[in-house]
Image 1 (cartoon, rainbow, N blue to C red):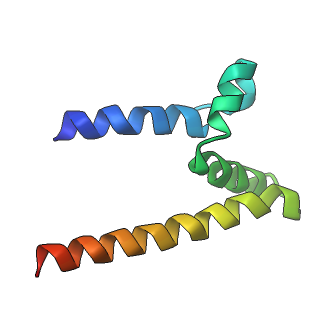
Image 2 (cartoon, rainbow, N blue to C red):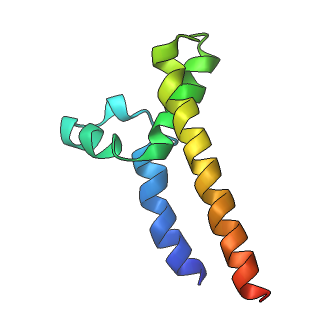
Length: 85
């Protein structure tokens, strides 16, 4: 199971910009990374550390954080109920 999780998480780490900012990558990689919700969360955290608290800098990150929170709570609750039914 661990190798499968590693295969899934590696693209998330690379495309979200956690390891390196996506501005260092080629244009096509930046476009692909814009499809990753975690990229917007990472950019919002990075901008807040730089002192940029504008709505444009933090808006998408905060929105995606709440969306991912809601989906995670729903999925976790459904899995817990299914396993304990």
